[in-house]
Image 1: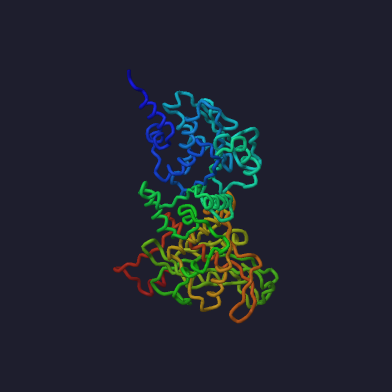
Image 2: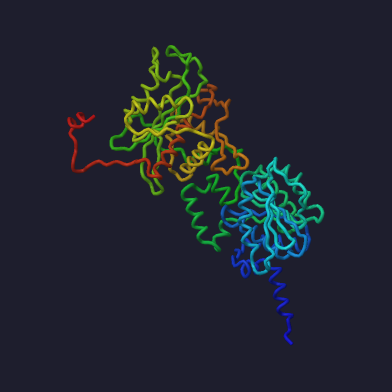
Length: 512
């Protein structure tokens, strides 16, 4: 007679080990850093311990894969019971991602053909055990559900804490079910970070690990390709770039320090002085931020001194190992001039800009064509013969510009002239006072609002109290749009002087 006890013991070990289930049944082995968190949740569920856990991985390093395999494992283990798992995403659109990831993992030999799926609300199960997906949106419906085995709150950084506590936390009550919170680090004020703080206090009290925060250095040994990806992002954007810092290194964005803290301002402060004339043989690029005109100004006097400035910034461009390096060397700064009409002592702004651009001869002009800038940009396109790139700002595009500009600063590819003159000093004041915030539910690349507060003021070195705008800063930041176009092959930033054929002064004059 064959002794079946070893086989039963092995099967029992297989059924209670997510590591073996992942490797032998799903044949998609989880990495060690994934298994540590998943096994802690499994043990809490099996022992009915009712613990809460937080799972924070670097972006695209396997958080959702871990949750999908964990869910499939529990459904398999409890397939002959009325086990209920509830999985909550911030929006309904994200539910499709969660169900698509879980569905393939419930079809395996141990499910014995008992896997199923339904909709409205989305549900996936094996036998009589099921996982139901809900949206945490304020207007979403979630009546009648129970999470008697596990409650999963995914993308916790985008969840509304009040809604989670009112709608979903009570679903655990009947069995004191385990809870798993997961997401990506964003700011210190969101639900994920508050949950982390709360669970760390419990850890300190009883020594039981509840927070599983994984760093790229923990991912790298298991997945060298991911480590190489992180290294490249650091090289291109800088270690302290908001998206690199939060999404890859799991460090929160501190919006209270401003977008340009002293460390970042030091990176952007050049050692070069302001340059009043172009240097022959040098490549230049220009950017333009347009302010409204002072309709009340009929002579050379500004009637509204608090009005924004129109700023045209000139950059000297040189090539570096990471790409072009942009040194701001001069700027035309105008307050209130009529765009197309001159007045005594006040030439039309269009005429001043054309003369300024003709003097510096930049290869291209990147101009803000939003709102009041549209008409002036159209006129410049006709009056100035070189390439002009209009930029029409939306909230998402300004966010992308801010992120790209920070990447230039963090990698040493943007520098402004020294703050020795009033205009240079004011630029750094605008940077110092620039604040920012990350909109809820939107990644930093698309959800960063950055601005100088409307009523910001500062005291000049001469003691005068003056308003601070963001015009010089915005004009300078537009160079990041030029860099984007350069990387896409849509903007040429080089020269092609012939060493064989040289024009005489008379020939050059005849060609211009």
